[in-house]
Image (cartoon, rainbow, N blue to C red; front, side, top):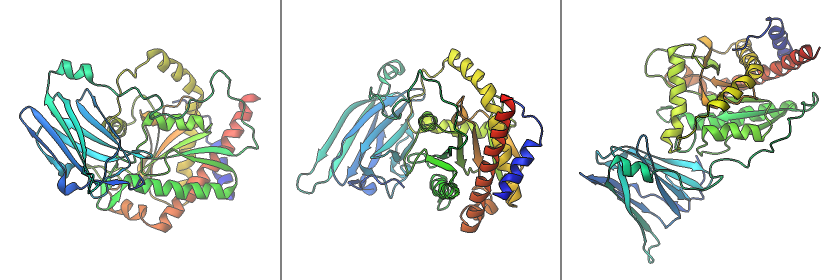
Length: 407
């Protein structure tokens, strides 16, 4: 706590702020050896051998053309998807958890192939099942006309928060509500290095950080995902609103194929990225929704964007302060920071107009030093403590700044 007060004092003295693995019940398993994705010139056949029959749904998405298959209670353990491919008509295949109780397969199609037949045959004696999907080549116009997510309201969004009532001023004595966002999950593994997968690493660290925050007695903590499931970027922000979050912290550990990036980096929201690497990272993070089979059509709303930009004029300086507080906490603990530790980019997950939000890259899996740190229990304990110190310091400085504004 003494360290946090010191950090808060540093923040207040710095001058004015400038605006700127899921459990699916194991009811059904895929027999990868008996499954395949094959094709002819004008056809694609997806043949999946399951330990038993399960409910499923199939739909297509356009721009680019994709086939999405959702399954109830299928465990994909033992397969990543690409090894099933044996046709150039499908350019990529991904499988994994999508939401609690459901898993997803996404096939990137090399052209407009529309579903022509879907048949699940169950062997009543053995109890096993075989799902065979047949796709035939069609025209781009016909494919686009039939593409789209089935109308299932609330499929990937929490119940809407109450609207029409202004958010009450926060009780200074109430615990801060912190939403931790473990990056990636389910069908979206994130970065990988050997046996280390970003989605698993961030979930375990988020749980660890949650415990450290709760032990202070000053915080309520909500995780955007509690298990290995996919959570869309929009849903992550919606969860923060539903929880009444005072701050939002997204946790990542990326991997870069070029350069020697290493050390912790904190990102705040900005329309213009602070550098080319940050712009590429934001694009890669935001692209995960599309790769996981999310329909992003019709999401632009110019008026809404303008209103949100106005709201961020007050929130963004508080997010910048949070970024500075986290960096101070990490630096005071003597933990490695990137050579340019404070950056900005247009991350969708940071675009809540009324919640101070930052993205923390704990390190890079492409760096041997960072990788060793990220799996080291002592380093993780120190990083969790540093983050908590930063959040405590931010809370003190944010409250002091709010008091100055009122005066």
